[in-house]
Image (cartoon, rainbow, N blue to C red; front, side, top):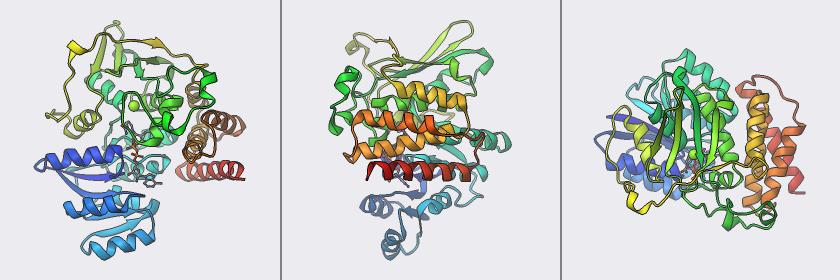
Length: 384
Ligand code: NAD
Ligand code: MG
């Protein structure tokens, strides 16, 4: 029996995690959770599971939950997220699932690894902005970091504990997102609804927009560089519109091992939760008689400038990645609020990274300060 601490319980990944936990009550016990804007859903989860701690958005929401769940500790805000991540430090049969969206996930990841708690990471922004801090922590602690993102989970499976010395390249597949068949001209007038209509995956809003701009693939290259400690130039993105191959490892002898499966995040989540074992899950198996062909196309970096920008920001290092992520978070939010156009997202992020005077190896406090400054500055500019 493993104890599960879950951040982002009310999101796309969080809900699927709870589904796996509730289907396997002899294997997992949900101890503490967080949510943000969905108080009713948190109340519903807490009524079904006996929780030790719940983290909510703010003090007002905390007061509501305190009135209902007298035995449960109720915390809130960014400090509350860290409290959930590091609750019961002596609990060794446990892991944290970080399914938060945004760089708000970095500090709780650090809090969990610092008490030697394994982390199953969906929150890719943790590695985009703080990969250097996480690598340091992993080097000095026994805790492990396991990827839930389907591409990284696929690489983890394909590697099957072989040495990275045997690896030539990592090949990361990309669906191409909602607008993969649009020209740059057609992108000028796309709607929010069209952007949120991903061809293959059902995910949270932010990652769906990041997939349409391919910022998501840029983030995934950075994520892979840290997770597998490999030069980013040896990580190759390729468009694969069926999303059946989730990613591949090419070894030095040019043998390639790919991981295939349905587009269903319950598969990578379950793999990580049961690792090193496997457990049946309710996903639909692939039916090869209905898959006529698998397609691959080279990525056009002019078509997806944010992918190119993510690679160059990673190579520049330091706080450029903080700015890349902060500008993207606020630009995606402004787009979803109907305040800017789809192509403005790119323009805002490119401009912010270009203007930033970077600092090397930013600390957590420096990352938080730069993140806040960039977000405030961009919001002020576009909400005038
Ligand atoms: P989501 O938007 O569906 O859920 C996000 C969760 O974080 C929710 O519980 C929300 O309440 C919480 N949250 C949002 N802002 C918060 C804040 N400021 N403070 C505290 N909590 C906050 O997102 P998702 O699609 O589940 O994605 C979660 C993470 O996993 C992201 O980093 C995403 O890139 C990554 N990911 C998701 C998928 C997927 O299939 N959904 C696949 C791969 C990777
Ligand atoms: Mg992914």
